[in-house]
Amino acid sequence: MESIDREQLEILAKLQSVETETNIINTKLNIVPGRIYSLEQEIQAFDQRLSDESTRLDVLQKAYRKYELDVNENLSKMKKSEVKLRGVKTNKEYQSTLKEIEDIKAINSGIEDKMIDCLDEMEEVEKYLSTKKDEFRVLKDQIEVEKDAIHQESEAGRARIKEIQTVWDAVSKQVDPELMKTYLRVQDQRGVAIVAVKKAVCQGCNLNIPPQMFNELQRGDSLRFCPHCQRIIYWKEA
Ligand SMILES: [Zn+2]
Image 1 (cartoon, rainbow, N blue to C red):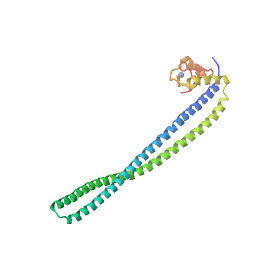
Image 2 (image 1 turned 120 degrees about the vertical axis):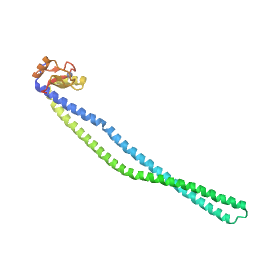
Image 3 (image 1 turned 30 degrees about the horizontal axis):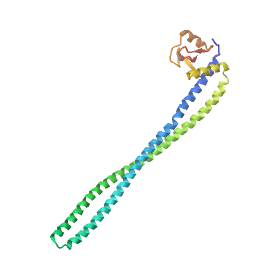
Image 4 (image 1 turned 90 degrees about the vertical axis):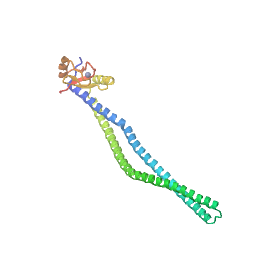
């Protein structure tokens, strides 16, 4: 069994803890583009809905103007028929001109109904747009704030990783080269290389360390591996 001083184990544990912190930060940094993307998608979808409704309003306004023109055109046709009516010679002509006028009136009445529906719909869309535009501005501001927070958090994370790297460089120099090799090998195999044992339970795999081994571990003078997960272990008071 390789003998080791307790301080070396503590240094390894320190290395492990800063590496774990780096991994946590990196995991958060990795999801930043996705978080930004989904916020932007949200605002884009909202913007699209507003633009669709604006287009709908535009179409309605055009339709309304077209109805107005049609009504006016029909009114002038009707005036002509009314003039004609005054000069008719036969009853048959009178009846047919009268029918012309009645037909135009019926058509205009139909158009006017459509105009009322059109106005109702326009009012509805305008109401939607005015409330939603306010909501949109609020949401846009919120999302900007959120994005800023994410960017700041990322900056802080990257700065922390640099700090950690400095710590790691300094601390790793204090590790015996052979021990460092072992550490890196276990890390390669297990991800986390060194774990504490609290109350005889390995914190890497949550399994119990045999009592004999636990007693030896408490002395902290030899390099030990968890018999279950093969990580380097050290004793830590629970
Ligand atoms: Zn274990």
